[in-house]
Amino acid sequence: MKDNSILDPVDMYPGLKEKVIAQAGEDFDALIKKGKVKVEANRETCKRYYETKEKLEKAQAELSSAKGKSGLAKGFAIFFFVAAVVAVIVAVFGFMNANYLMGGISIGVVVLGVVVGILLWRHAKGALQAAIEAAQKKVNQLDAECKKLLAEAYAQMNPANALFDWGMPQKAISTAVPLFQMDENFDVEKYTYLIEKYGVPAIYDNDTSIEFVQSGSIVGNPFLIERVHKKRMVQKRYTGSITITYTTTVSTKNGTRTVVKTATLTAAITKPAPSYHYETFLVYANEAAPKLCFSRSPQVDINSSEKDLEKQVRSGAKGAKKKAEKELMDDNQSTNFTAMSNDEFEVLWHAWDRNDEAQFRLLFTPLAQQNELEIIKSKAPYGDDFHFTKEKMVNVIGSKHSQSANYYADPDSFAGFDHDKMRENFVNYVTYYFQNFYWDAAPLIAIPLYQQMKPREYIYGHAFKSNLSRYEHEVLANTFDKDILKPQDCCTDIINKVKLDKKNGPIDEVTITAYGFRGEPRVEYVPEMGPDGRLHNIPVHWVEYIPVTKKTQASFTNANASKNYLDSLSKNQGYQNLLKTLSKSPLAKYSRRLGAYLGGFSPETAKQLSALLSPKAEEKEKPAMPESTVKEKTGEEK
Image (cartoon, rainbow, N blue to C red; front, top):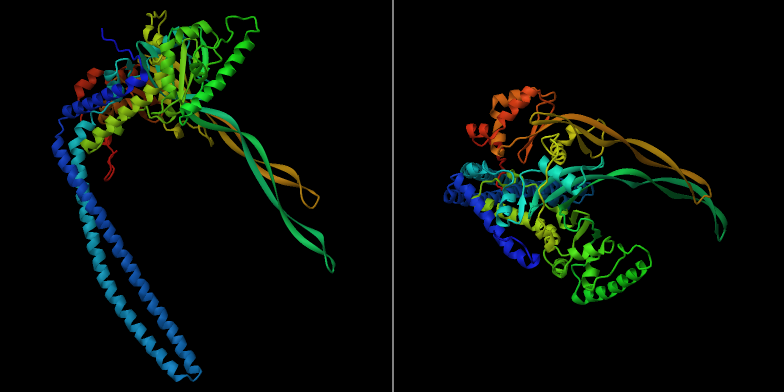
């Protein structure tokens, strides 16, 4: 059996990355071959398209220039007209003062100005109008040619565009690096496995909703990439102000006088308000060191030099020694902190809240310490940007780089009209996906015991109450437009929570509860002392956020069909008739072979839907790609 272990995560990364790049390219080429795309013909079409587009841009610049010259000519004409009017005024003024010479010259200027202005305007108008019309004609012709070539390029690539499906990047990574296996979706079996065997939290509270989840395994040990939408209450600052007028007496050299002054008084208050944000992290379950708990946060600045680190280690080692001496004074020998002999690891890893020294050392062998130090001291691509928390058998990695990572792998984002750019885009995305995931997983695979520990078989002692995991329930709920789920008068973002109502054959009937807030305007008067020696009530306007909820019935199922087939169902009359039986407006959403519908189905229609979504039905239909699969962007790739 081939050993897929990664003994040195930092040194092995470049080679693994090259394997992923090669596999992504092979997968894309296989898709192109399956779609029977004529690559050279597409390259020729795209070459003509880009050349025509360049000509179009130049023609548009010429048109803009011609219009600008027309405007300039009009400006000159207006100038001469104004000059003529001024000349008339001067002439009249001259005659009134018996200055005949000035009057004659003025009249001459008037006549000359008017004549020159009229001639210039007529000539410029005609010539420039002709130039504008010619430029506009050229722009129209090139624009029509561009659109024709773009449509031709899309037609050449559409057979391949129809084949892009969910999970393609994940499959490329799993093939190139067998240590990482990624699932099509987070099924109910693995969900139950993580909860019952490892103690992964079953679900989050009403302040957190799961936006995205990707499940898989590392050497058989399960992991989840989670992106969650969170709400927290913060103190929001509101300000108000008023302007007051008052009189005061001031001394002058002639005595005293009364002066009127103004002053602006301001006041501020803080009130609770909801704040929303997203978090992405990696959850990994492993039976090694099952009682150990600890946490660590980033310690090494990416700009730190070797001298900076040496100084940091010397100072930190003193702190570790003092902590160890202090904890020796208590009676609990099992939890006493004992500094490790490797000062550099102890200080830079900085897991000083660990609860079991023996299991900590079991996990962090000399090789593990060396691997972790290489990761956190590396400058590229991310350095020490991660938090690592272990709570018994559950490990959580949260990194700075993963917060902006795109793990959705939307098939539509890979479609386009230019074969070469599409290939580059797909390979770059898979590489980007692997890079973000790898450096979150690196602190885990840096521990040899984690790779050596294989999970034992888990026997379920009960039937599953649902078809899909509760995590996927929330992910599907979050695919719907928020405006559909929002409570009435809600003025904030919402957190969607899902409750399973019943298992209706292959369909999970659920209730989505959207939690949000409506805002009520309030005014609070704050007394402030003014420079006039009096108290003034300053109105401060603020918003009171009052919780509101809305419940929406929905149905979720494992569609178990390709994206192309699901897109084609819009033309299937039987499917459309099924959607009409929903208790709400017929709205269907699909993601990663899972289907979400607003409303509920009867048991009979649930069976009919399941039959339509079966692999046999897809094989029978073999539909062509729907027109909506690719949204063209004039002159641009997706």
